[in-house]
Length: 324
Image 1 (tube, rainbow, N blue to C red):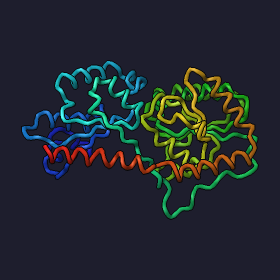
Image 2 (image 1 turned 180 degrees about the horizontal axis):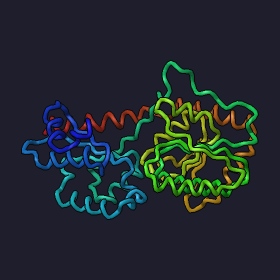
Image 3 (image 1 turned 180 degrees about the vertical axis):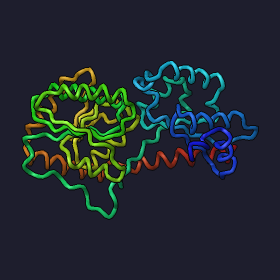
Image 4 (image 1 turned 45 degrees about the vertical axis):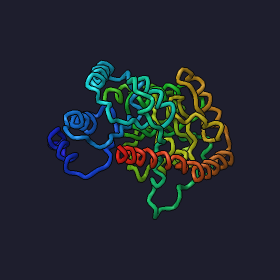
């Protein structure tokens, strides 16, 4: 939709004129593509199709703290108008289901768990698999941060962690500058990094290039304050690049599965120590880990049960409506 058509009358016409069995909303707080369709559902005199709403981590405690007053006002209005009628919440994990139930006092019956499906074809099908690292780089650990630059993604924490490391690091930052004041704050912290850290901002990455970009690095540093799933984590794993992650995502078994490390955000020293320890591994050890991760991604990412969960979520709603 062009911006000038992102309004209630045009949203209303799209819903009325487009044959559909289900309305799928890909956010809870999005004004145009969630709030307006929910208002249409409220005002419609006829029964509307079932609505599936995927909050995408917006009910995590850290996410709710951002623009808290505005969100509290909308949540109160949402409950008062009973906009949750005929509405099913899609949670990507039990962790997110708990956040939804707590954040909006949702009935447990209205929350269905259907895991997000990773984009396994992030590289062009015509291209070969991502290349593994080249020998001779062990003196410099290549670390990547790839995400939106916003407080939720916690780039300033990553910078503070690197300031505590003792090894030599090349730190490259990729992602859109979504929050300019926050980026300026991060730039100030980058400028004060010690001499063992080389850094640069590398701009944005096209989705088709993300996996190949990850394959060029030894470590993905991602101390996010909250993810309902974390597609970027799956893409790093599918490229064979270990992930150093916060404990605010469903990816809780990285160390057990030999894919990386999960650490609490109140332990920045542990992040730094993990980076220093990994920098001492040999090229051969890193290659073996990368090979293991590539095999793991082939067999475990986008598992059949995740596909079944998503399929059942939609078909069950259609069957229930037909039976009614």
